[in-house]
Length: 346
Ligand code: 26A
Image 1 (tube, rainbow, N blue to C red):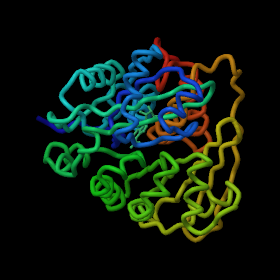
Image 2 (spheres, rainbow, N blue to C red; image 1 turned 30 degrees about the vertical axis):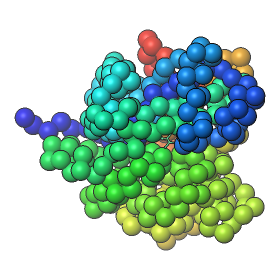
Image 3 (cartoon, rainbow, N blue to C red; image 1 turned 135 degrees about the vertical axis):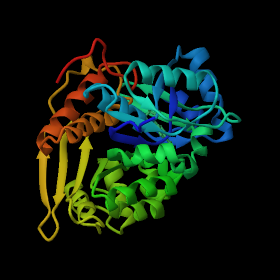
Image 4 (cartoon, rainbow, N blue to C red; image 1 turned 120 degrees about the vertical axis):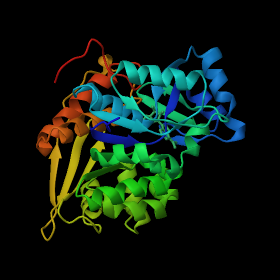
């Protein structure tokens, strides 16, 4: 059988979101910090059942880069993308497979039949979302999956790569294999910072992969946390973006592009071309009326999805940002990290 050809591959942690409305007391009960993302400890495991039993929680496909992949696929011709990560052999995995298939996203999950599929408890309080993640099977992704001949042939047949920074908690070697392949073949490699705890506690794998990144996505908190780890507390967000853009780069044939979203405040973009001053631009975010927002879970992932769709199409940086903002706006109006059907067109 011939190897299929894809434009973009996303790698990270396939999770099912268990999302319900809560309040501050609930966050306190489970030792959660507003808008934070935590890996669940034993004393917090009751949250999932609590959400389902007492908070009318809904099960929605999640996993940050899987949301980005579904988002990019939403804007592209069918079978433009594929996605990898590890799931269990259970109902949750079945739901994820079905949803991705419905949305035209090809998945090649690695399966750990001894461990349940990962889940993320999402507590919605107003326009905030607080997440508690139990990675379970997602934590067992191994580079061996990527190295299987049929999977690696598909990698070789793919033009662009996007790794969710959250995967640095799981398999840095798998992320590095994609990053190195991209640099060797002058293909595009993109990474999201994902959450403050990635630059904070996964500083070394992040430092190892950054030189391979052509695009780095983050929000203001992640950018600041990264700058702090470099000994730069109290610098502005544009300065953080500039600093990140200037870090060492392996593939000097492509510029480093850093995209920092700040909710409804302007998106900061820093572009570092080899041997030139870093160029910083701000792009304002079109206003979305508060009453149109369903919840903010997955808004950043949707932005990255729209942006990636633009990169796949070879669009200008400005158009990529517009596509990201357009998809984030659609995602904000849906329940959880979802996109509206029937499909809307950009
Ligand atoms: C390793 N961790 C903590 C995670 C995640 C995650 N995706 C991958 N790895 N913790 C939360 N998420 C996902 O982030 C999305 C919102 O940006 C949630 O599943 C949610 O859909």
